Length: 102
Image (cartoon, rainbow, N blue to C red):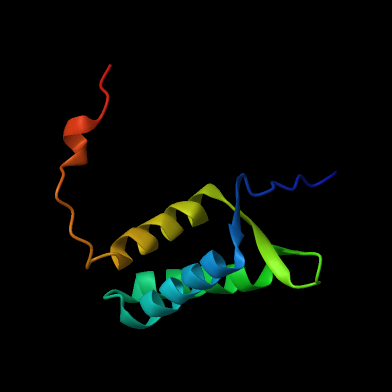
């Protein structure tokens, strides 16, 4: 019987600077987030993002773009960790009032 392999379905590209920011935020969360469960998730995501992304090089041979693929659960956890890191940003507008309703 042939085993089926499910590929990650969430894909995005980041430049080198944004990749480093992303990894910096995960490192911050790994050390500072309150719950051990989320610390472990930050650590696991950091490991995934160091192991599996595909770097694309520019004409000079330097890494310029990083191609990242995640499973939906991993992408969801990454979003939670990113949003929770922005605790110092002041939000003056309630954007839920602007949501389009059917």
